[in-house]
Length: 299
Image 1 (tube, rainbow, N blue to C red):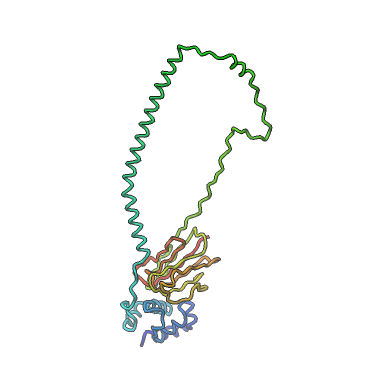
Image 2: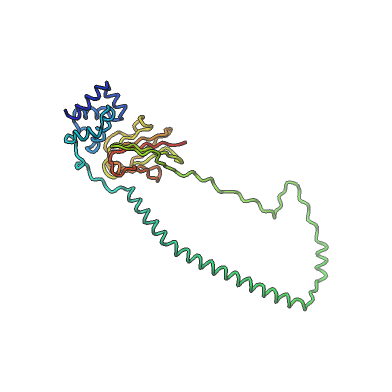
C-alpha cells in the first residue's frame, strides 16, 4: 500500500473529513488530497513534502517517523533540495563578534592614556595651589608697612546710598536663579523578544513573547526561495498568499494592527529572516528547513 492510501485509510477510520483535517493541521485541503493521491509534485516544494506528511500522520494517529521510514523510497530525497545560502543572521553574529573583539583590544590603551592625563591634571592643580599661597603671603607682607587712606568722599557716598525699595508681593527677584526646566524625556521601553517555548520534532513550532514593540509590524527577508504562510492570529486571516516566494519578492512588510499574535510557517528557515524593527527574531534550529514561529505580543 502506498503512503497516500495508508494515510487516507487512517483518516477514514477516524471519520475525519479533509475539511476537519485542514482545520487541525493548517495544511490546505488541496495539498492533503495531493498527499493521499501520491501527487507530491503538487506540493509547494520538495523540501516541504516531508513536513506535510509528518503533520498528516500525526493528526490521524500514526507514528510520523515510522511512516517516513517505511515509505522512504516513495518520498523525494533531501539531495533534491536547493542549496541554502549562508544565513544573514549568522553573518550579523560574526560581524558583531569581530567588532566586540576590536573594542576590547582598544580598551587597555584608552585607560592608560586617561590615567596619565588624570595624574598630570592633579600635579598641575597642586603646583597652582602652592604658587597661589606664596603670592598671597608676599602681598600681605608688603601691605603691613603702608597705611591705606580712605578718601572722605567715599564715606559720604556710603552714607548717602539709598535703601533698596521693597519689592511688591508676587514679584520675582531678578538675581534669583530660575529653576532649570527638566527637558529630559521619558525613555521608551526597549524591544524584548524572549523564547518561551522551543519546538521539537520534524516541523517544530517556536513561541516568542514580544514586549516593548511600538506597533504591530514585521518584515520578512528571504535568502533563497521559501514557501511561506503567515496568519494573524494563529489560525486566522492569511496576511499573504500561501506559496513559494523568491528573493525578488523580498522583503515582505506585514501589518496586523489590532492583533496580538503573528504565526509564520516557512519551508526554508535558515534563509528566512524575521525582523521587528531592526531586531532579528531567529528560528532556533539551524538544521531544519521546515519550522514554525508564533510571536505573542504583550500589552
